[in-house]
Image (cartoon, rainbow, N blue to C red; front, side, top):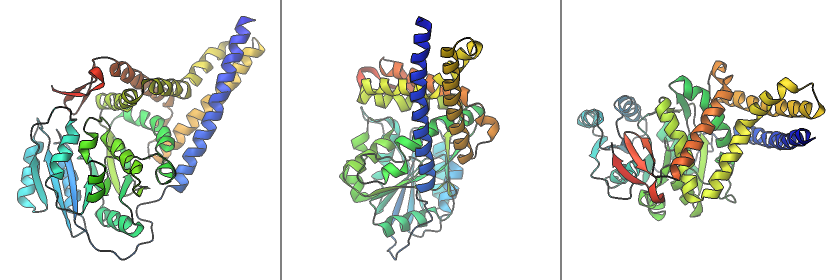
Length: 399
């Protein structure tokens, strides 16, 4: 009797998970269908404002040249590229210097010593901003590549729609097996929590920038406090986008996966730290909500598989086990289907999509470690630096 009661409690949980996945899949489908596209809009005549591209780079010797090549090749006429060497320990600074010598559009900036209380990338962006002469500021990452008409399209889209800021969803490039397995799993949530539908709805509070590409008016950037206003944030692009939305400015998120490519994570180490970085800011803002989100992710992404494994050996032994088996099979199928559909949208081969259960385990594990580290004096590593979470105040430590 007790075991039957426990099993039916599991069934109730699984039914809830099924309904949640139906809602998530619908949200994902709506996001795919209704997200605007960067190069599809009603263009209107506009002036050609100067664009300052702010490109922070730390230990990016393997990517910075391709990024600069794609930026130098842009067909927009009025722009500058401010490339900031953020205390790199490799040849990043030398590469930037050589490009600056050959092309007047490239301005080489060496970031000064980071003040206390700043995150590294945030400070580098601020150092680049000090040199900017443009009316529009375009922030991007060193591991991003662009088609030659991206700036022209972004400026025209921004001006034609009368926007204050525009961010573009890139094609997410995965360099190793682990990221290919994991990205479809985590991406299903990006289609809901930070979907373009929510960001583009002025009645919603959701605001978000993709760090690989967001263009913003200098006046708007100043109004929200520049990067100084998010200097302590680990995910500074998302925090800055939130400030823009909260400030009542007109912002828009569009798809640009045919025009922009950005690396999601480069190897197992950066993948693991990227997952932790998603959870730590949530905990620092509100610990209870972060814990709640973790358990929601645990039950949505992983527990259907566990309940299925638990019920299979006993599926024919009782009605309660049969109910657990059926409900867990349905919820697992929904979860797996969402990951497969997302993998197709991300242009990831199906051989990686079928490893969705393993990807779920990695995501849950990364979130759990992020929670643990956010509550302790442990740290998260990023780009050769270690950020301590002690006392809920990220302090910078060189390693």
